[in-house]
Amino acid sequence: MSLQDHGPDAEVIFRFNGVRKAPAYSGYRPDHLIKGDYLTCGKHEYIEPIVAMPGAEVLGTITFMSPSSYPHCLWPGKIITFQEGSHITGTAEIINILNPLLDVKRQD
Image (cartoon, rainbow, N blue to C red):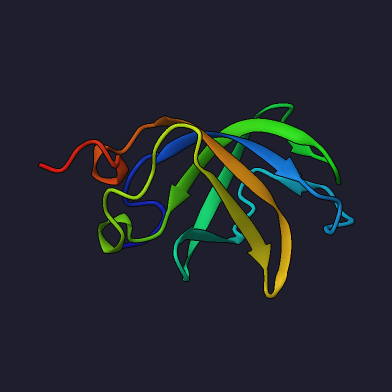
């Protein structure tokens, strides 16, 4: 499944740690440590502000690749890291789960 096959999976607060020196724009696709030692690609869309400067905090959404591979692993308040290669470039705090498959409370 590609990142275009479904809508956003979660609303988040992105916190960039300054490792990335250039701004990030909507469409940025780092890897996310979604659970344990499982990394998955996700596409960021920034809402406010619309550009993520180094060290910034930005409201936005993430659309993950293949969420059916890691169901029921998110909850509001969970913080996941995102990275480029081995360099962690920030964290994403889950504020709202849009895809019920990923909600830890939904085991149906």
